[in-house]
Length: 373
Ligand code: NPQ
Ligand code: MG
Image 1 (tube, rainbow, N blue to C red):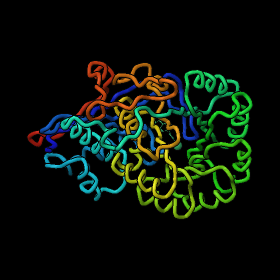
Image 2: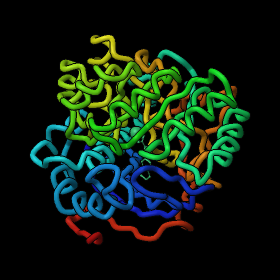
Image 3: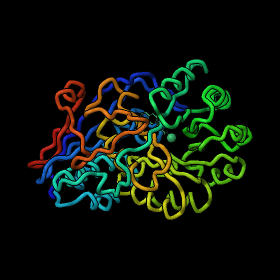
Image 4: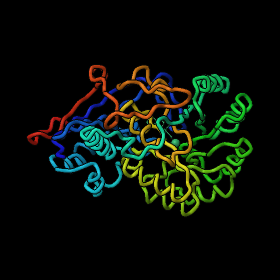
């Protein structure tokens, strides 16, 4: 398959409600989309980098720059398949979310061309996946309880509370008191240190499924120490940027569970290798979320149907984040999302709506011209 040209697009989508984490408040999503034009058809990919480098070191302006100047020149006008992309981009360090967007668009083009779904390609074992929802930090406990009650009413099968120092025990206790033994977990997005281990151990009596990424990305060894000081299983998110990072973290006992985000690890193919490793090691995985549009969500829902995705993911419905999605919306049915069954990602981008929310476009390739800077 020849990658003849790539269209990059930035779109703006406002969120249905502000989403606060320990690293800031989001009120809208500025998304970079990538459309691959190949000699056997088109494919889409979504770059999940946020506006600021506060979740990880990647951010959307940086991703756009590295795609145009360093990544796309290594794959454009070549004869390749999605499985070749990792090796071609290997000389560039980091920038996993930007790399993932290229690989996903090529995989989508390839699978659409042969009429195969992402789910079939990944070896999906279920037609629908259990969904959880990630609940931001709220101004008051009363407001949090109202939001959580709303999501449980919609059928979500697991609640994840964002926590930070000063917003941890109280919200967890309140949710347990009001809603009983609902599947519950917390995500600190790196806001704690080992000095907080006594505070984190106070979460133990609440029978949480896991504590996600309590400390900074590079503190993998410290997570192994923390794991000895708390009973609740530690789950890593930000620290796991590759198969190797996952293998090392598991080997030293830094986590008992892993959150897989294809963007964070450089694409679905590396994500599949991590899934397989975790299955061999007896480590359950679940699908993370980055407030994706229908393009990113489609691939994530398909991958979440693999056998070792045994915990509900942050694969929420489209209306958890957006008034209107750029594809047909993902809708919750009894706490599950259906796995797309059509070729490739199995969703159709609404190009008219997309045009109406596009803030920038650029194209690369075809006769060596570049209109993207
Ligand atoms: C997490 N996601 O698991 C992330 C964090 C996150 C659903 O909790 C813009 C870009 C906003 C990336 C907000 C969920 C984001 C973002 C939150 C990632 O840690
Ligand atoms: Mg997380």
